[in-house]
Image 1 (cartoon, rainbow, N blue to C red):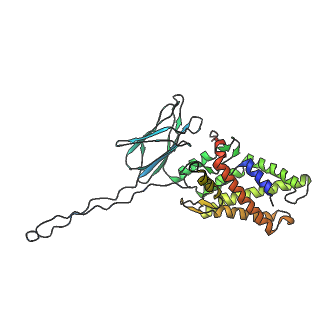
Image 2 (image 1 turned 120 degrees about the horizontal axis):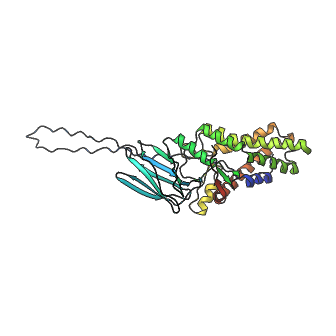
Image 3 (image 1 turned 180 degrees about the vertical axis):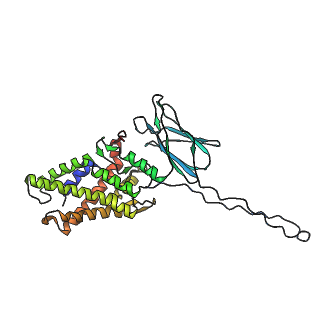
Length: 361
């Protein structure tokens, strides 16, 4: 089984965590109209019929959201975002992740977004139409230092929104190198489909940096003789295989298979605000509490089950000396402590070193 030291090195080298959010749609409940009574003298007139109400249920409101970026696809925090229609004007400031969100918008109106930020040319969107209960994510927001034209894409379904957000997450790398795909920095990420969960897990498992980490950890294990394989090139090869199998099974079980079956979000949601105490407990509880695809907090069966399943599968290829129930429990406990430490690093440290590279697709 893996030692605590070997696991800690993996954590400090890669800082990649699984973590689990779902879109929220603003809705209104219909209000019944009051019925008015028409008074008349009872002796002179027959009973007047009560008037029928012409009120109709109020339509569900919609939401417009987006992320402000520059032409280099770097976020632009603090931009002034204005939403306007024929009878409405709202203004807000994009948060530190460049995100904005306007809720409670009536359907049927044409809305326009305008954005201003110091040092950039003002940006304006085309007319945006909202249907009842619709959640629109505006992309193509690229603030220009010069007057080039940009295009705007509007996504009107949670699946399209989640697909776009995963593309952005796949650019997240610590120091521009180490994958950091399983962290959500926005407040309202769309729920991942099963297909996207598998796609994200496979992306991490097959990343060249992940493979480099396997080779590095196999060398550490070779010196510590963990697992109890022989020494020499043959033993190193066996440790490379074991390390690769450990990582792949853990990523796929805890990041794709169980989250898809249990409808849980495997991503870590960066809090970033509030007291240090609240942020600490938010991060430390991640191995045990996650968000479901329904947006509710749940017991993190996916991560717990992924660690148990991965450790159990290792009995198929580990030496007999490492196949004991005690070492299985020790391995799961070490994995849990690793995840707590990694979540704390995500919350308080890695965000400032995580950048986005340009799209290559």
